[in-house]
Length: 175
Image (cartoon, rainbow, N blue to C red):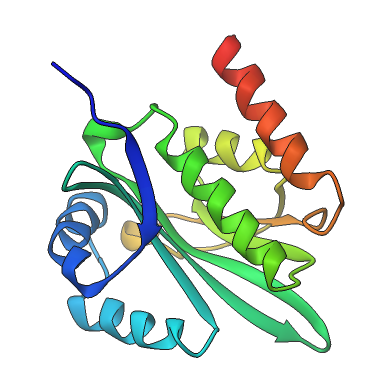
């Protein structure tokens, strides 16, 4: 079997059918098509950034970022990062995170944050490789009452941030 290279590109409406399939397979309470349409409508105004990862015509993951001006400091919030079951543990999430980091830095964000399921240890490990550290808990944030771990990374504006992340990814692949 020939494996096609992964392509990361801006999310468009044409991707939503596949994005929604991955979303529904991942979450009991998932975003609706209308939520994604509303989010994509905000991309042109600069407050949102959404990407898909695909192999050939198949969407294998997607990610979103919300950029806000918090009292003069620009911060970014990862709204979602989801990889299809068939593509997990293959570097898709890390590639999407790197592209989100590049975008956040390009718009002047100095820090970024996200929520992750308390039980999602592989996802938390990925985020730690990008400099995130736990900062709190949101009780009952997810369906069935699961808590969310709030994670922050304040080193996003560091000159060598992207290089450090790339080196952590390389070291992980080599081990």
